[in-house]
Image 1 (tube, rainbow, N blue to C red):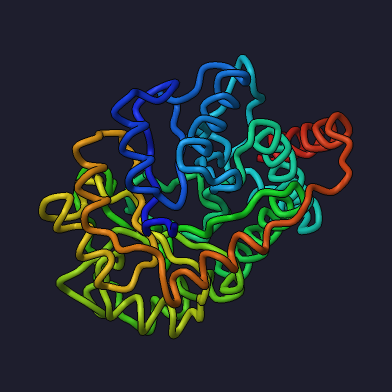
Image 2 (spheres, one colour):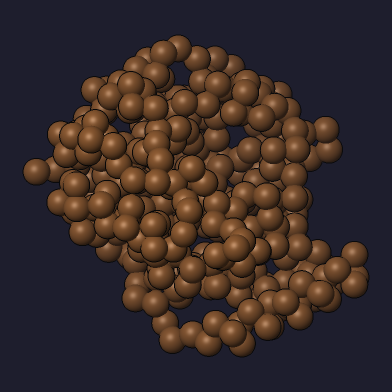
Length: 341
C-alpha cells in the first residue's frame, strides 16, 4: 500500500489512540518532530519506533529542524549545543578552509546525535541570503550574504550530514533572506526585480540543485508572481525552482499551518499540491488539521514517487567517526571565531 504525499507532526511524547488510528489509515510518507515530542533519548527512540510501526514502514523518514543556534529541537541536558550558521560564515571570512571544516564537523556531529535516535532527515542546510531591513527570522541562521560563500558552506554542511547517514533538506527555496515578515505570522512580499534575484538569492541555491530534498519559502516574489507565495506558485516552482535553479529532487512545502498562507488548511493543501510541490508538510500536531491535509493529498505516484524513492535511496551508511575528537576540533574552531569577531 502506497503512502500519501504528506509529512506530519504528532501532538506529544507518545501517540494517542486517535493519532494511531489516523496514521494507520492515512499512511503519511514521513514524520517531523518538535520540542513537544522530546523528553529523553529513550523516549524519542520509543516514539520513533512507534511511528514507524504504526504505518508498517520500518524505514519511514523522520525529520527534525536541528540547525544549531536558536533552531535546535534537541538540546541540553541530553544533547549538546551547536553554533548558529553565522559562526561558520565568520570563520570562512577569517580562513575559508576553517569555515568549511567547522560547518562539516558541526553537521557530522549533529548527524551522529540524530542517527542514535533513529532520526534520518535534517531540515538543513540553509541557502537563504539575509539583507538589511529583513525580518530577523533568518538572521544569524544564515551563513552569509554572498551567494558563493553561502553555497560553499551549505555544501560542507550537506557533506557532514551525509557522512553521518542523515539526509539533508535544502531550505528555503528559492530564498527567504529578503522576507520582511516571519512567515509563522504573516505573508512577506519581496519586490526585488527578477534579474537581481537571479544574481543573488537564486544563485545561492543553484550549486545545491543536486540535493535530494528541498523545502519551499512562503514568500511572494512580486516580479515573478504577485499573487502567490513560492509554495503555492506554479510559476515559481516551474520556472525558478525547477527551471532557473534546476532543482529536480523531492520538493516539500514549508509548514502548511503557518499564517503566511491564506485559506483553510484544506484549501492551502490543495494549492500546494496543484502548484507542483511533491509533499505537504504539516507540523503542529493538530489532529483535525492533519485529517484535512490527508483528505487533500494524493497517494504518492508518478514523478513525485520517483523523487521520494530517489531521495531515500541516496542515504548512505554512517562513516567511521571519532565523536570526541570532532567535538574538540569544532570547539577550538568556534573559539577562534569568537576571538576574531
